[in-house]
Length: 147
Image (cartoon, rainbow, N blue to C red; front, side, top):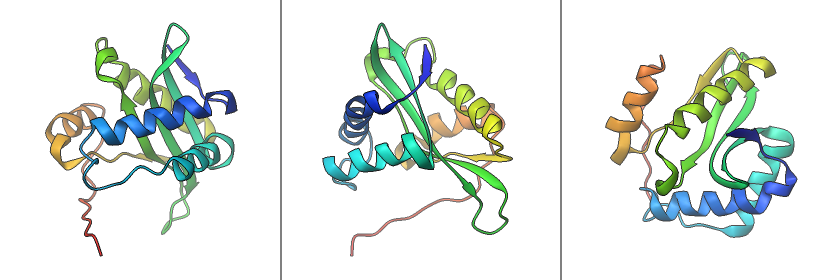
């Protein structure tokens, strides 16, 4: 089941963010900072956008968070995914797609004209294929270097 995260979910959202780094492809590139993740999640839940949760029983086991803002160049209302993760043992039944569809609907209700997603390079064939099946087009590829 999909539902909107509230402040009562802040610890669960932070923990899912931590798991996404540990279990995902970002672990050797991005170091988890609990306080920073907690405060960012709080800002997304309360001001910057929305966090949607995939819940099994009463336990949040997945999330999709997005920012809502006027696009940098056009001013067009835009939604940008910033966190998207479902615990491995709960991925059967396509909760990721259900979160994506719910996020699109929520973003539309907020007035977004466009929605953007990212895909980790090691999973771009699988994740990117899901986005493309949902009508998304490749927009750019990002790079990072430690300084």
